[in-house]
Amino acid sequence: MSGDVHRYHRQMLLPGWGEDTQRRLSESSALVVGVGALGSVSAELLVRAGVGRVVLADRDVVELTNLQRQLLYSEDDLGRAKAVAAADRLRRINSGVMLKPVVEDLRGERVLELTRGAGVIVDGTDNFETRYVLNDAAVACGVPMVYGGAVGTAGMVLPVVPGVGPCLRCVSGELPVATATCDTAGVLGPVTAMVGARQASIALQLLTGRDVRPLLESIDGLGGEGRLLDVTPLKDGDCECCVRRRFEFLERDDEGAVVLCGRDSVQVTPAGRRRLDTESVVASLRAHGSFDADQGVIRGRFAAERGERGEAIGLFVFGDGRAIVSGTSDPARARSVYARYVGA
Image 1 (cartoon, rainbow, N blue to C red):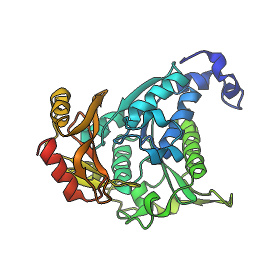
Image 2 (cartoon, helix red, strand yellow; image 1 turned 30 degrees about the horizontal axis):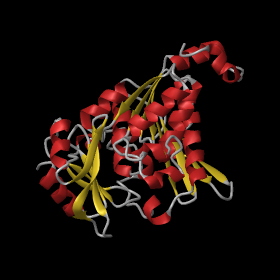
Image 3 (cartoon, helix red, strand yellow; image 1 turned 120 degrees about the horizontal axis):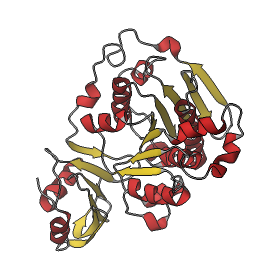
């Protein structure tokens, strides 16, 4: 069992828990995808509860605007890969849990590989396309997923248990077009903590073998009111994912440029991803600005490149060739910066 049993004594006093349940939890594994506002809360609670292995997957780096609600990070983490910073923090909380940071934008076979080794997926992402990738993986591998979302002062949580209830596509239909995001409507920190905590609670139930009903929970972070909706009737008998088992989101091409939620940044994913020689790339970039490398992530700002607001263009380059260009929300400009300084 991970850690000293005494650490979990208050948890083991719960009805139906005890040492056997705690041991089962210590032998389980969780995949947390997105270690931002929701995922940082969920991941910390899972680690504190004694889940034996937690994989932390995130494509992003810590930004100043994250600190209002992303509880694992401090100002010392600015510019660091979230998955790495989160793992470092969580190791200091519970050294008995095996933590694996994954600094990637999960797609295709890679997300399937991580899902197959997990007992539950916790969705800490900020967009429905990635959630549908996770939904495909959950159904394909028969692994439950706990969806969560928060914007403004409201949040939602839904367990997706393959073979028990509807999948996320049954409930949400075609890929939704977002009408509000954290960038346009803002987000209240306590709401994200409430959603992340509820996701962790459901994940612990699933990992310890408890039955979980397909209930969509709505959370009002200001008024304190909540609603529960049984989504069982929403099961689509002709669903492309959970009935026909066509996993189109797993198969989608992820090349190109995507504007990231909540800030002037664009993720650039080059065609034919390849591992970069970090030392040679950072040496080349230093001729154009202030750049360094931290645990395989290159980061820095250009001396001459300016964004739409007159700020210096920043660049984060990851080992798989993917990059985040900050200081612009123009995909074409981001691709141009990437091609000029990193390579086509």
